[in-house]
Image (cartoon, rainbow, N blue to C red):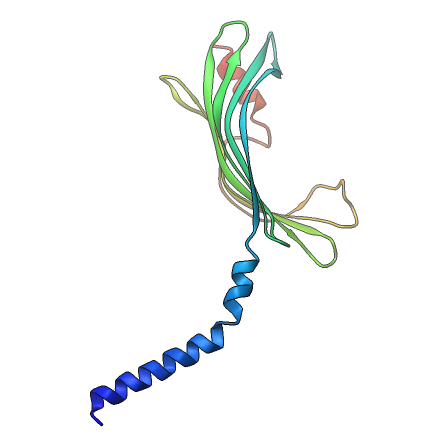
Length: 174
């Protein structure tokens, strides 16, 4: 038998062995596809934020995608819209494109991973106003449900101290 034929037979045997070893796993993986639900959003919310001397109306379009993958469910937000000063009519645009993964531990604590553009607000003709983008990993205790989470990891860029409302009101007051 030639060397070429031996190599072909060896390759076929190895391929068949690998196929038989991993084949029983494949149907289980296919059968356990995550359950996904897409929720479209197209809302106008008056009095979304009260600012000094005026209220802000928000118009939001986009979608939420909720994926239930057993112990690792996720929520993806792809939203855009405007914040409008109700007195002057001046508007700012915003974009949200992030994903939240929720990991339930055996001790019933929860770890949340948030990654993406949590909020980017821009003014027409002026550019960036305020934003929050990056990745956070937070751990919520099972013994203190109303306590703030422990910050395990944080990286990215944020122009806020936890709230974008003061910067938003200042930009809309022009």
